Image 1 (cartoon, helix red, strand yellow):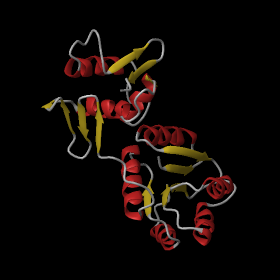
Image 2 (cartoon, rainbow, N blue to C red; image 1 turned 45 degrees about the vertical axis):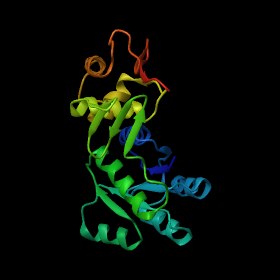
Image 3 (cartoon, rainbow, N blue to C red; image 1 turned 180 degrees about the vertical axis):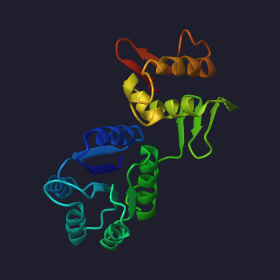
Length: 226
């Protein structure tokens, strides 16, 4: 499991990024100050750093300089700055990628995967998930059950991937909503129940006695471990 260090002082943004990255199988460390982020990097040696430029305690560019003096950890800079000079300075310091706010959390996860793949820092995240008789191809965006294709909507597909990627983990409705929509505020969390019902209708032999997606009463849902 790759470890991603997020150095960012916007709490809501950190919450969403963390949810997406963990749903994609990454371990996540959080720092809200630049100096704290550098200390975590020195202590934990993460596989990649998501680094905001405007930080209290220590500017993001200074953090990047300090990291580059001591190591080659991949860095993706996150910033609201739009000036070309800021971008060029960041890249000249050795940043591997540069994302300007606002951005999609899915885009960030995709960039993280791409940078890790290019750097060879860790094993590439599996593009195919398998559990029981289900095969989920992330690149082709297809699902088969026992060799037969299963037609899912994009929301159903993302919901299934989030759960299958971490079997046995209990997700509450808000976490699942974030995983499929990108933010906790774009929909009512009870809509997840409708998506789960539709998924079960397409995947389960008997939706009333589900074998894949289990309900954890009072909490949410989980995909059953083999």
